[in-house]
Length: 140
Length: 364
Image (cartoon, rainbow over all chains, first blue to last red; front, side):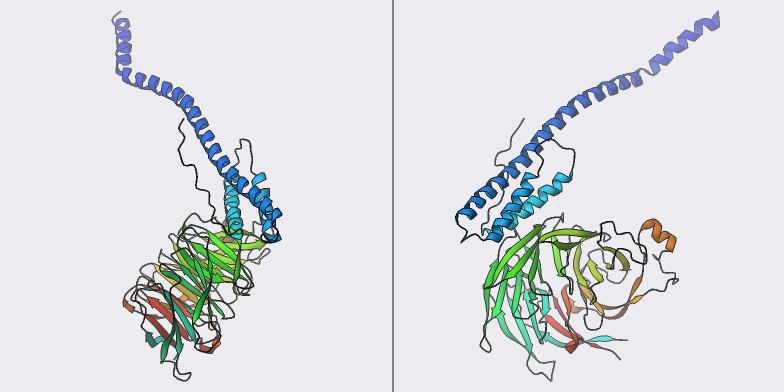
C-alpha cells in the first residue's frame, strides 16, 4: 500500500518539475503558428512591394523607349537607324519581362540587362535620362 | 641575376601619379595624376636614354583626378579616364610640337571612371567605373563614340579593364574579388566567364603576349595566373557553356608582396611580369611550366583534376629581381613594360610621391 501511494506523488512532482518546459513548449507551438501566419502576410507585402518596384522601373523604361521610338520614326535624320534598332531591342527585352508572379530569380538578371540596354540607348540618344526610383516611400 | 637600373627620374606632377602608359610605337610616355593633368615625356636624345623632358601637359578637360591613361593602338589618340565620371579623347595637332587637344568627352558613367582600354584594332574602347558597370564604345568617324553595351554584372566597383592582345575579348577586375570575361555576340556583349579565387579586390590584370593567360594582382597580396581551356582540351577540363572556353587558375604567387598589389604588367617583349603596390617594391617574375611530378603545393593528379574539374598548379612564377623603396616610402600605383622589342627592357613606374621613373632591365 505504501508503494502504491508513493508512485502518484512522484508523478505529480515530475509534472511540477517540468512545468516550465511545458509552458515553453506550448509557447513555441503558438509562436510557430503565429510566425507562419505573419510570415505569409509579410512575404505577400514584400512581394507586392518588389513587384511594384520592378514594374515601376520597367514601366519607366518602356515609356522612354516608346517616346524615343516615335521620335526616331518622326525624325530619321537626327536619330539613326542604328539607334532605332537599339530602341527596338530594348523594347523586346522589356516585353520579355514577366508580368505575372514568378518564382524564377532570372528576372533579376533580366532587369540588369534591361538597365544596361537602357543606358546604351540613352547614350545613343545623347540624354542623361536615368531612372531615379520612387520619390515617396509607400507604406502598407 | 637580372636587375633593374634606374634610367631617369621624371618630376613634374604635383600630386600622386596614378598610371603610366607607353606610346605603342615611339619612345613616348604618358602619365596621369591627381593634379588633373596628363604629362607627355619624350627622350631628348635618341642615343642617350637617360635624358628625358616633358613635352606636353594636357590640362583643363577634367575637373577631378585623372585615374588612367591609354594610347590608341595607332598612337594618334590618347584616352583619359577621370574621377569626374568622364572619359576624354585627346589628339595631337598636326604641326610639329603641336599641343594635345581634347576632341571628345564620353559621358555616361554615374561616378568615378577607373580605367580605360582600347581594343587591338582600335575600333572599340572599354571604360569601367565605381558605378559597377563596364561600358563598351564603338569608335566612329569624326571623333564620334557610340555606346554599344553597358555591362552591369559586377557587384562592386570595377577597378580595371584590359583587352585581349588580338581578339575582341575583354577582361575586367573588380572590388567584388572577381575577374569577368566579356564577349561579343552580334553586338550583344555578355559575360562568358567569371574568375573566382582572389580573396580580396582585384586591382589589376594583364594578358600574356599569346593571350592564353591572364595575370591578376590583388589586395590579397597574391598574383594569380589564369589559363584559357578550350572545349575538348587535353587536360579534360569541362567547358560548361557550349563552344566556350573557360579560364582556370594555374599559378598563385604568395609570400612575395607584403601589402596590396596595385599594378601588374606582362611584357610583350620578353615575357617577364612586373608587379608593384603598397609595399613600395617593384618585383619581376619569370613564368615557367611546372614539371608534372615536381611536388609543388597545389599540384593535382589526373584523378584529382577530374574530380575537382580544376587543373591545379601548372605554372610557376619565380622572382628574378626586386627594387625596394622604388618610390621611397610611397605606394607604387603603376608599372608598365615598354610594349615592343625596340626598348623591351624599359619599365615605367609611377607612385604616390608624384614621381615617374623609367627603369632598365639589365641581364648579366
